[in-house]
Amino acid sequence: MNKTISLAAIAGIILILAFGVSLTQIDNQATAQETTPYPSREKVISVTGTATASVDPDLLVVQFGVETQEKTAKQALDSNSNLMTSVVGAIKGVGISEDELSTSHLNIQPVYDSYQDKMTGQYTQQLIGYRVSNIIMVETAKLDAAADIIDGAVAAGANRVDNVYFTLSPEKQLTVKDDLISKAIENAESKANKALEPLDYQIIGVKAVSLSEFGIPYPPPVYAGYAPDAAFAKSSTPVFSSDQDVTTTANVVFLIGSS
Image (cartoon, rainbow, N blue to C red; front, side, top):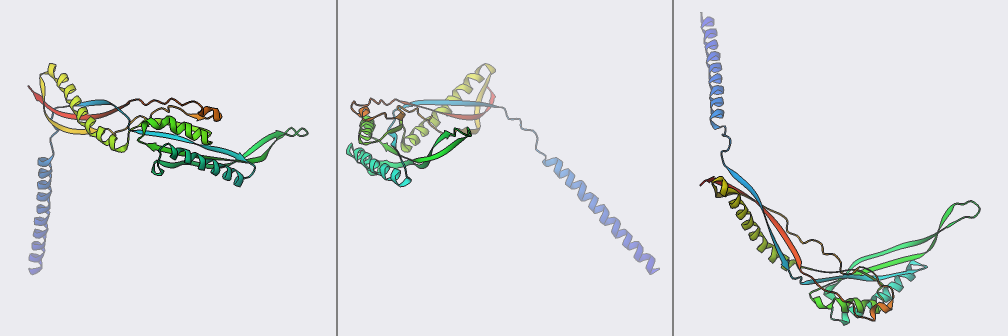
C-alpha cells in the first residue's frame, strides 16, 4: 500500500513539473510576441549637401635634387654630396631655414650597358657605374620665393626639379573644414525643403548625419622635369600661385511629417 502511494505521488509531482514547464514556455512565447518591435513608421528623406570654397594657398612645396653617375658607388655618393651641399647652401641663402628642408628621396642604383655578342648574337649586360639620386623638399610659407628657390638650386648644381605647387597648411585645412561642414549641412537642408514643398511635407527632425572625409585635390605641379643646364638659371623662372578649390559633402537623413 505504501509503495502504491509513493508511486502515485511521484507521478503527480512529474505531471505538475511538466505542466509548469509548458506554462513557462507559453509565457515566454507570449512575452516574445509582445516585445517584437513593429516596423518603423518614420518618414524620412536622405539628402547630400555640398559646399565649395576657393581658398588662397598658404604653403609652397618645391621638390628638386641632384642626380650623379660615377664608376663606383662611393664616387657617385661623394660627387652627389658635394653638389647637394652647394645646393642647400644656395637655398638657405634665399631665406629658407633648416626646418623648412627635408629629404624626400635618396636612391643608389647600378647602371648597366647592354651589347650584342657578334659571335653568338646574345645580349650581355655590363656594369658601367652607379647612379645616385638625392631629392629634397622645401615646404615654406614664403609663397613668393618659388622662383628664387628654383633658380638658386639650379645655379648651385641641382639638375632635377620634380614638383612645384601651392597648397594649404594643416592648420588652414582644419579651419576651412569646419566652415565647409556647416555650409554643406545647410545646403542639404535647403535641397530637402525644395523637394518636400510640392509634396506637402516638412522637416520635423534629423535622424542621421554622415560627413565625408575632408581633402584637397592634389595640385598639379607648376613645373616638373630635369633642368637642362646652368643656362636655365640665367633668367628668372616665373611661378604663379592659384586658388585651391576645396569641396566637402554631408549626407543628412531628415525626419519629415505632413505640413
